[in-house]
Length: 219
Ligand code: G3P
Image (cartoon, rainbow, N blue to C red; front, side):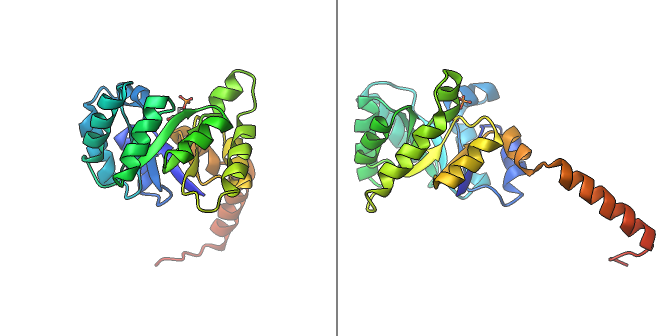
């Protein structure tokens, strides 16, 4: 399973990219707004930090403008994936951009029916929002299970299931169990993944015992 980070904060991206754990980045208008920086500049910089896809979202809602915005974003760097909302205009834009060889991430997916449409439109990624479904009392991971199962029925389909709106490490483990292709993870959740109290306790004991040996591995 691939790991994308869900942020537009270039310092956070740089730090995580250095670990070798990152396969890509997703942004959205809210994350861009948080940076207070120029959208195109931020996307350009992020694209230099990771080799994998960097999702940049269109802001228009009509097809013609969305398509123009999508073309402009795709021109920023080779690894831009244009993000479009799951509306009829978004699907039409997806279809058109995909035909031109642009990677498209169809976002704001909340149903299996919508995911079927995105695949039909040639999306490279479908982004179902699990946390936002959980927030309204539904089980977001059921949607991932349904989409993974549906896509598996059509082996020629190239659309990857990109689990978005992740709130905790369990979402990620469950996504892997279900065979999702990608998780886009907020930086704080990515850091939570590594933590386990028994790891900390075990390491402290090993270091204390090592100290007693008086040895050094280097020098
Ligand atoms: O980038 C899309 C998605 O991951 C947003 O998550 O936490 O705003 O629901 P959230």
